[in-house]
Image (cartoon, rainbow, N blue to C red; front, side, top):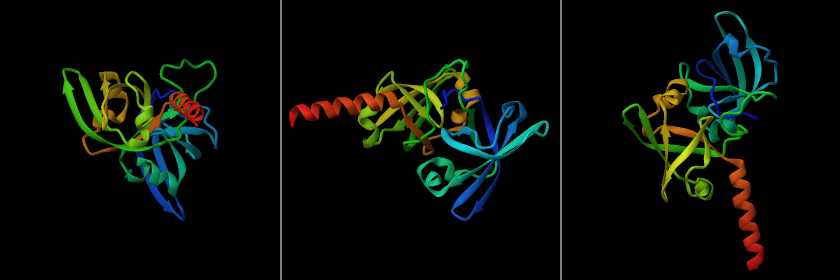
Length: 207
């Protein structure tokens, strides 16, 4: 479980294709790898991955993940190359402040950025709203974009907007995103549960 509060944007240092999976290695500041154990869950661009190997060598450590084909297809991890920047977050621990919302790291799918515009120091990003997500993306509701907990702005039949502050642009990869880029989408599970429950109840009443 994660909070959607990205700890750092880190660089892909190596990609190695194996049979039926791809090994992804990230260069990570050692302070973000303290007390890490093999098998730990880490959010990479909002996708929950399992740490298989890691090193705490100063000043820059590394951690590797084995990413299966299904994950490469369903998320934007398949488009990463050596040198790509990704959003990095360790899993939530008891006693840690939750500044975003609960994020599972189970990506529902991807969507394309339609436009990026800047007004002063603030940025607006418009993202396509796929039909299968439409009932769950609500104005002022939560959504996770590449693992970043964000609040939805305006919603239309075909798109939704995000308004980003300088801190978000600095800490995450969204500052480098442009129109045409594909981002990982995780819907707010609480919203999904409520909407689906209401729909089932109404359908039962009308049966």
